[in-house]
Length: 437
Image 1 (cartoon, rainbow, N blue to C red):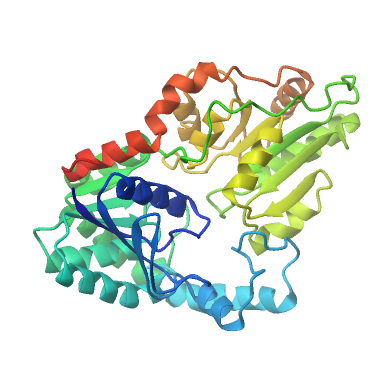
Image 2 (cartoon, rainbow, N blue to C red; image 1 turned 90 degrees about the vertical axis):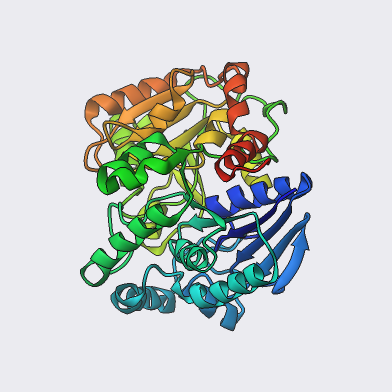
């Protein structure tokens, strides 16, 4: 059996794609008999050290300035908390957000998790000195995790280092830090991670291609391991009953669910809001019958525009159990694509496994979500151009809404879903690490 060290700012109970992926993998490996240590950021209610389902979790430092603030004032209803209220940010919060963007965002490096760097690095170095590890995994984003991995690799060069990259650092629609100050340094550090890591993993082939086009031969070592279907997902559970089964076509309500966050400018709700506005203008009878349910953290810049649309209801962050139950109640799931053509949202797998039809609002020609879906049934793609949807696409969308066939045979997707289970993903990482996982 192996001893593994995972460096990730976000781990249980954080609600984030990286936290979900690495919590599931760490617990799976621990259940297989491996000794797994995780160095993560502090979280209210959790001590600096504890064992969770066999995983030894070491918490040190804070993953952002926001978390320091929330920790000091002791708020449990802040943005980023499960069950927190979804309301217009208070005046002080809006002012704090402006100061954050005007001052702190222009100063921090490499990202807003920089406060976590020194306490996490100290804990990682202490663990590496005390024990002999077979492999170390650093997780990004935030890129700060890779910087800790880089320092650890330089100090312990024989240690196998895997750099797991959910999203690229410098290849972004908008720089993650002050590009004028740090642009060249950021690129050099990402290059150094690619050079010194023994293995590098991304979740979609387009990301590997983008890395190779920018960084050249050093990126040839990149492997692709797809998104993970959370172990709690039950593929064979009965689906929820049909919505409004007794309603006539003119009365039928269509519930559409969006699960995830928006991040300007990579992914915004603007094109979908344009679609809704044009739909109701063209077909007023759909007002009141089209109900959109958005689950996920709502950043202040999106709150007003989402709240103005009567068809939309905001739920904020919810537990995985609540999200799964809500997803089962939807007639249709909504994906809003990124403006980049190399980033695949992690929810793609759960959407795929849901057995629900999915509307994909695509912003790019070579859409990773469409590529991931392949020729499997149940995907309806609409094209957007600069956050606008053409009248022709709006009419296609309305025709889709009026089609009552809102089910997809789960068996059509079951076989492929096996590739996204924790067993399959864990084994794929094991091959990269040259250990039995």
